[in-house]
Image (cartoon, rainbow, N blue to C red):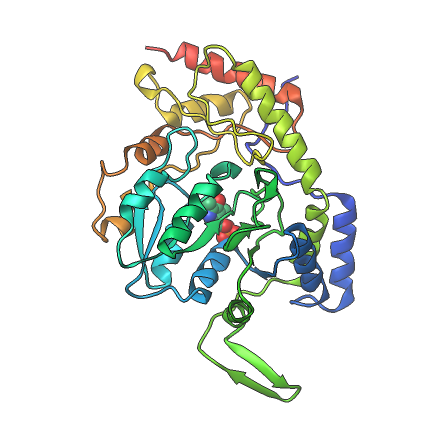
Length: 377
Ligand SMILES: *Cc1c(COP(=O)(O)O)cnc(C)c1O
């Protein structure tokens, strides 16, 4: 009998959470209410007591964080050329200019030498990404930001539960944004949050997620500016609460599975392995690079042949951001950020999620090694 298809990721929602959601659905209060406040309190506790405001996606969280920090027209924000496109899109949507720099080939994280070189009098902020949950060098990041008086908006969409020198991402630093998309280490179906901010900035975040409105009394309200709407529902928040309770267990399991990949591929791996990180890595993804120059097959064919063997393979991300039409229109072009471009061509995301067995990793490693051996030039 063949084994069931192994996807590259799958959320794990426990029965207690499903019951909890059913209770919320029966309660008569579905939009933002007590469970959103509870979820924010739990996230705040997780992040050392810092303020937390949730939104309907990390994309909204990042955009609101920029706006709350006062970043807009005429400003430059330095950000990596390899990430999910939302990282750069929010900078454009806030009215500022994304200034791309390259990333490390194995860490996938922003190259701080290039960050320093990219600073101009217009630079207002750095938006680094903790790619796959591997923290950027936080000492270097905040040293540069401090020296040049720059704000930092951390795209920590993939990094919940990661830590730097024993301190959780989100528990220190400037404005830190997490995602609760179903592919992330914990989910609220869709959702995200901003951690940190001055009291004034936290108020701004509240305005941005709800029409720019502030209640003055039960029957009196003001609209301070024309904002959109991005408030989380109580249904989503209840899912998030159940997930947050399992985060440490999930991440411990992810680390075991990732360690298995690294140990099975300790010698002569057929792929280029990503940077391993340490105990502070939440192992959000396991994404090696394919040695395409040495293969007779394309990445698409690799993915197809793995699927024939019952294994799902993702791609994060299929292109460096500056190569997209929207960013070429800002003057960027191919060849500017070779590592980001190469990662876009060669990266594949192999299965890694908490419900996997160690033997599933063995299966993936065997299949990958076999497909690549047969495809060798
Ligand atoms: C997932 C992700 C986002 C966007 O998160 P959403 O909650 O889907 O909006 C932004 N940046 C990175 C690096 C991500 O991985």
